[in-house]
Image 1 (cartoon, one colour):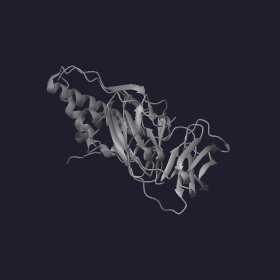
Image 2: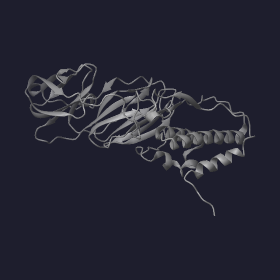
Image 3: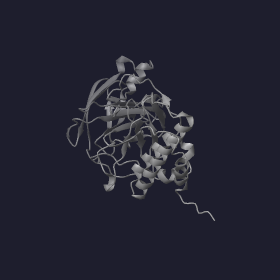
Image 4: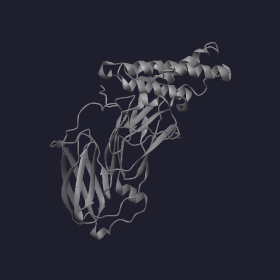
Length: 353
């Protein structure tokens, strides 16, 4: 009788590549030993950073030798992944498993993938899209309903009855220095025409996300291109939009559709310092503040509104009533600075930093 263990797939691959040990001279591995971020989750080993091989990597072993070498490298990564999993370090184990997938393809390892992926956000497995590696950087923040209306040539309210609103955001009663925020306006009557979904970009460049904060309408699609020479692993554990884009190299992107309203925090599972916020809104009017809390609306119809405000240092938005009159209007809004400090947990919920 044959007894099959949960790691039988790893043992099978290891046995397969052992038979090809004489296929050719091993080429340089694509995995690096240095840390993707400066931490040791729960006292275990840090996640190693993976750098893609150069496009002109020499092919000198022939088809059989190349395949054998890839299998050997994948087996080595699986051995490390199995050891990390046994040691309780799920984030490192999954990263090493993903490295093996890149080497030999996910189809060969699909039977054991649940061992390494259980407990992580749903994985996006669509093919990556090619992007222009020389594209200009995205801004630090983005999101304005009025800017979108101007681009779409939506006519503003008549000037004679139009109102403007300038405002400032305070955090715990102090000026919002060094933090970005979001302000939305909804007609108090609760009825308005839904905004159309758009396509947006949050890039990975110089090991940070740009924009750092972006406001989008419900149903919008966000593409996450990689402009770095290292891999990134974009993810979110938010119940409003949990996803895991996996690993992909420079010049590639995956995307996700945000269909639920709320604030979604995005991170990189390889670099704990990387984080961004996507504010998915249903309100007809919204704008992102600058890093001093300043914001403005220039084309509002007079009337009663419900204002909502949030800062990246806040857990939840605040709400207040507001009346807009024709002409100039001003407001100061206050939010709490009660968001937990430090990097967000990894995609399994493990502490980092």
